[in-house]
Image 1 (cartoon, rainbow, N blue to C red):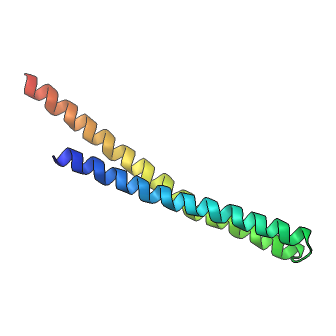
Image 2 (image 1 turned 135 degrees about the vertical axis):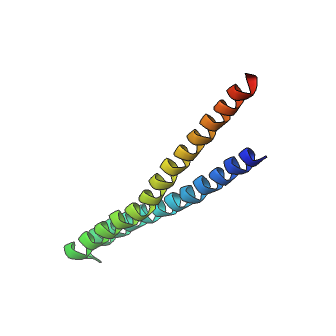
Image 3 (image 1 turned 30 degrees about the vertical axis):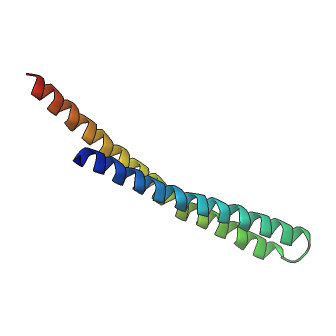
Amino acid sequence: MILSLEIEKSKLNREKSLLLLDKSLLMYFAFLIIGVVGFVNKYLDVRFLNVMIALSFGVLAVGLVPYMLTMSKEEKKLNELIETYKKNKNWNRS
């Protein structure tokens, strides 16, 4: 019972970080498209285009770093649970 709850909690954490990554990718491409379209149509100058591109990379980093941290943390936790389960299974057989 506790094992299944831990797995569900891990799934929820991964889903939350994946949602954040999805939103940051959407904003990244929105910044790029708005910047390029604005520059081509002469609404933005070169300096503002550079700011938009820098902001798009910032948004991407804000979404990517928590995703990577959450995935590595959850992977470690699941590996520990698997090892604990294997040890208990082997111990019960003896």
